[in-house]
Length: 204
Image 1 (cartoon, one colour):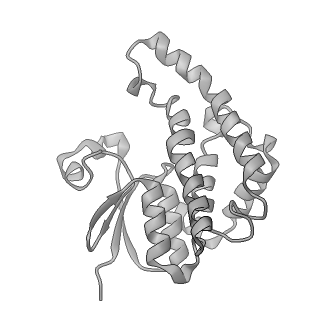
Image 2 (cartoon, rainbow, N blue to C red):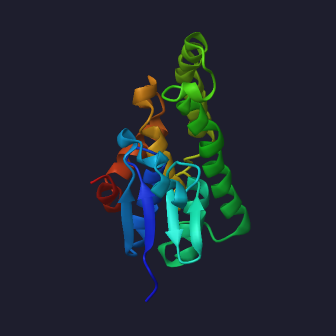
């Protein structure tokens, strides 16, 4: 029997989307919580696992993988019986398009609020970036509202790893000063996701 996958995870981060995907597969895995409040992500022990000092990190039999979008694609392809990704080439690329948008644009815009020090040292510059966060996140979610969720799920009729990822990132809107209710499809999706057993287990 192969060694279970090990997910290094912090609640509320994008690693939550990976945990949801693993729960959807029903396969056994090990969970290792990384305590950001204790700076555990910067410890020598964790940096030996993920030199980036961030989550998620997924330890597999072949080595360690990082970056949420990559982990989601890996889980979907490794466990095809869970049907977490489209099987056609265009559909899979569409899934990647959405997940990479969350990772490269939406997550970065959100991060300018709690982690503005990554981009500037001066308090005034940090404050200016933080003031832009609500507007940028509103624009991002307006794009998602208008261009995805043509059915009950992000990609339409088929549930995919995109859905856990959107649920996770949409959970950041309140702290960013954005009312999710202004995006009816996103809001309905968030409530529908909250009812899924895999999501409830991942949040427990």
